[in-house]
Length: 214
Image (cartoon, rainbow, N blue to C red; front, side, top):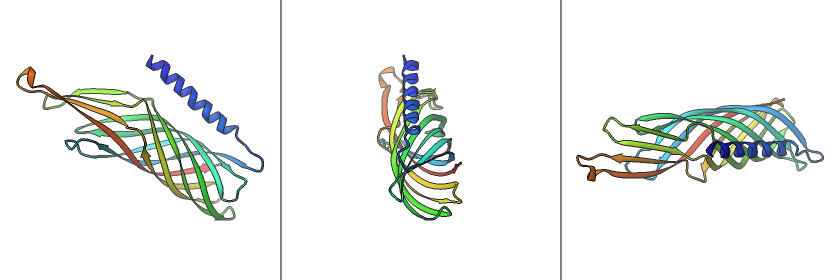
């Protein structure tokens, strides 16, 4: 059942990307390219017993930009493979996602040589790696970390374009939905002493990206 849901969501993402690829209004300019970069992800827990975790990740994939008839405005869309390490207490595992993101650009430039812009837009992430990890810690506690299958967030950023082909961007990703649930069992001397504790996580990320448009 879970595999069927994953396939359905993947098909929906592809359909959305194809619809954007076919969007080419009169007098607009459509350009295709590739985007990649690095990110610093900060995972926050809603429990005082857990500390924040900062880890580095990367992303890469195809992108397109549509210049709108209104001077200075454009939209872009990208379908990216995103991978990042997550630290949960003393354990680290990889989060692998297929990410669809779209942004509205507003900026100004000097011909095709140089331009600056600000951007904002939604991001939809679909988990393609392991959903659940269970392990016993060195202190004997049973722990479980469960990632959401889908995550919604919002990007804000700024960047520069240069040489008519390159675009460098710095952006900040703000989660709208939770990233995961973390559950752990504290074992006592007696079975009756066992207690379950629960925490939710949200992940913010700062990213630096470089795109090349053909």
